[in-house]
Amino acid sequence: MDSLLPLNLPSSPLLPSRIVVAGPCSAESREGMLACAEAMAACGVIGAVRAGAWKPRTRPGSFEGYGAPALDWIRRAALAARVPSGTEVATPEHVREAAAAGIDFLWIGARTSANPFAMQELADAIAEICPDKGVLVKNPLNPDIELWVGALQRLYMAGVRRLGAIHRGFSVYNSHPYRNAPLWQIPLQLHRRYPHLPLLHDPSHTGGSRELIAPLSQAALDLGFDGLMIECHTAPDEAMSDGGQQITPTELASILSSLHVRTGREAGEQLDALRLQIDELDNELLMLLSRRMHLTDSIGECKKLNDMPVLQPERYRRLLSLLLERGPEYDLNTEFLKHLLELVHEESVRRQLAIINKL
Ligand code: PEP
Ligand code: MN
Image 1: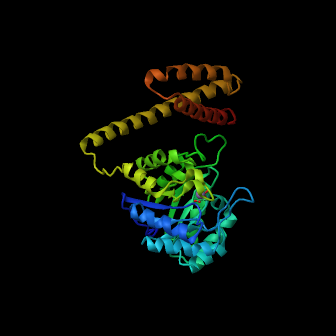
Image 2: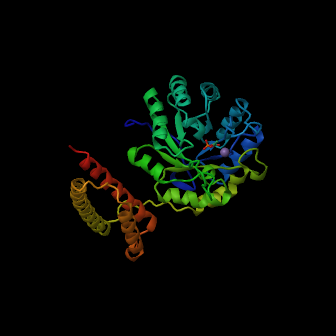
Image 3: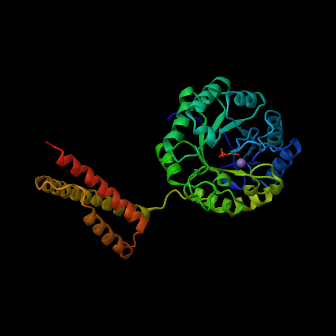
């Protein structure tokens, strides 16, 4: 994905240089949509207007959106606020209808980006009907970066070049206190792989509650995300979907003005000197790891000679608990240390297995 085009989504007056897409979970009426967009524009919070016309609901029987008629409400509301409009599409028919209604950008939801067949159909439809529209891809429900990358690649390979990604958390067992666990390492990995791909955070669907919107948004900005998608409703408690995580335009304005965007680029000599030390330490770490692995290999030879099994669980348990006990002394987080030592041990076992099986 090396030749992406700009998404063309303006930043929010209250959050300079960051994209803010906001609006209700679903478009509930022409008047409601207009009132929300006008109130958001009056508070200076947007950006771009979002609302769902087709709502993917977990269980049947709940409100599933007003469908195609809602598209015109969304477009007119955004037009009145003088910003672009966007909606979620999940089928080629949605793409056709959204394009015909003049919706400016599209997003693909978490349930759809998890399905390669649906993604391919959507990618082909967008490429055929409206290849120049901006398309934002939410992370799939499951914490699988390859699935997310795959969804983006299907669009790119079909010829859609105005792409962006939205991190909305992952559906995992026990994500408390979040509705969806943030697992920040996954969007950060995506950012490392595709530094030019705009990356937004959706604190509404990640947190699932109003109180979590501000801290999650700040965390995303601290990590260098390019913007936010936030659900906003003039009367959240009466919303037809996702009421508990929606906030009013005034609340949104107050949250956005409380956020701090770190814009520093050059930290000067002090940072350079610290980075130099880190580079040296990383080199030392590599050398130490290499020495440790070579010792491991010699132990493997000994085990082979003495016909011993590679795994010596008792010794490993003793070693691990001794080192973990000393972690706090060195200001090292126990979970981190455990993870690291397990990795090193797994690699040692892999090398020794190769040695004892060598003829
Ligand atoms: C939404 O943005 O309204 C939505 C349904 O989100 P997600 O696909 O992240 O659940
Ligand atoms: Mn929602």
